[in-house]
Each structure stands twice: as C-alpha cells, then as structure tokens.
Amino acid sequence: MHEHERARGQFFAVDAELEFDLPSKDELSETVDYVCVIERIRAVNESSSFSLMETFAQAIAEEILRNFSRVQRVRVRVRKLHPPLPSDITVGAIAAEVIHDRSRLY
Image (cartoon, one colour):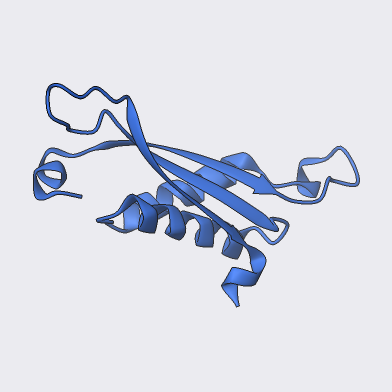
C-alpha cells in the first residue's frame, strides 16, 4: 500500500469460500458458523496492519484454518474498493486471492 493510501485509509471487501464436509444433521453445531468466521476476519483486520492485500488474504486464510477444524480448504479474496488511480483509468476494485488447505498449517 502506498503511503498516501495508508494516510487516507482504504475500503476493502473480503470474500471467503470454505470447503468442508457436509453436516451429518441439520444443526448449527455440525457446520461452520459464518458469524464466527466473520468475527475472526474482523479480528485479523483490527489486530494487524498490512502493506499488501496478498498478506492480508493469507493472514485471514491461516486464521480460518487454525480456528475452524472442519474447514479443509479456504479461498480468500481481498478487494480494494475504488483504488486511487490516474483520472483516465476507472476500476471498481482490484483484488488479491489466496487458496490454502489444511496441509499449509504444518
């Protein structure tokens, strides 16, 4: 992230796709609670500062795999919304994406 972006602040959107086995019964305790996932993503964002979207995405992916044992694979996409660009270029977002599986933790 450029210094002027850091000073001004940036808006990001995070997409997380989790792969895990289907639950054996129709109960929340048998799956991954997306509210808890969102809370972990928020904690990563609030506890650290990142210069690169790639390292932010990686930190989120690792946090999800560490905290949710049912998740076997995760894809995290971090999108910088309305990135500062020259006036003749219009882009709604720019993104970085990482895909990690459980083997990455060991």
